[in-house]
Image (cartoon, rainbow, N blue to C red; front, side, top):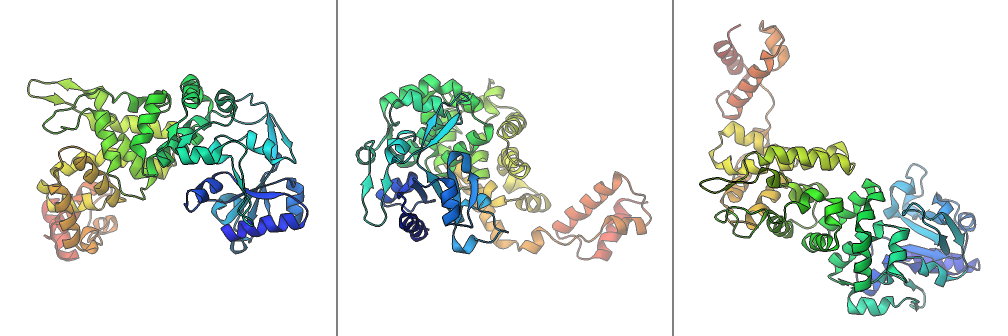
Length: 448
């Protein structure tokens, strides 16, 4: 995509326009990282860009943004708006006037001056432009110096930058965590001042920023910065409540629920699926509400059930898809079942192993152990069982169906589920080798 973005810039220049790589891709190139996206800034208006590149998608024309598809994605059946990774975003130099809703500019004025375009961007490390032909860097805000010093600094007045778009507060935290940078004191003070205003940002945008924090490999630092800035209690108050909730030291020598959760995030695999990251963050979210000191030790009776309800609430609030929410909730609901895995009946174990995305459940269990007592016996037992039991034995074809029961003279009703479950358990335990044996089992155990 770098070469394609360069060709777009060369084409725009051939038509008499200015054009540069801009934003995060310049930062990443200077850090010798491969950018996820390449963005182009130009003084050509959206209409002029669309005249030069007829296959474009004007997804944000009012803001000066046009997407140009790469050659392999120029089919109308492959809309660029849904597959930005196959497109280059071409944005017109602009200045933004007013942000009355704290999210979107009230008015966009196109500009001929790249300095004006840079001045309205978020952070100095994202405010540079690059000529990919000559290698020249346009840096009007000190971005190169801040890259060298490892500082996330708002461009211009930080309070004004965050007043314009409150989501920038979360982005500052994410960049600082991802790169291991510090946040400029004035920028951080502005985040603390405006933290409670993050509520005006759509829950979907908040969710996406938090997901990036949780999956980019630096989740613990991100959560600590969220906490220190005051944003954590605004965006994830149930996580903030974990702080100071003690745990029994014989099982959790690492510390309280918040400390344990932060440690656990460090042990997640990379790359980390978003559902696993959220399941890990929320796995003990029910503990603060169920904390009690019993005569023998600290207890959290029913914390899984309470945690499931809280996870459901959070997933609804953050507008997760039904599939993602279902998996996140399943991770919370099942994480304590590993404690009984070595004592499970064979049928119960096989049903456990066939949970949807079981690898995520196992990864959460491993991280949970490493972040507490460090005992991986159950984890290793499960790995051994997965290696020993072929997939067709974990999820075999049913020996008996509801139709078979009707033919055998059983009336449809709630009893069907009990019968079919009993047959399945016996089959998983190896006690029913055939359909005939299964039907005989049904007649014997459940006489019509």
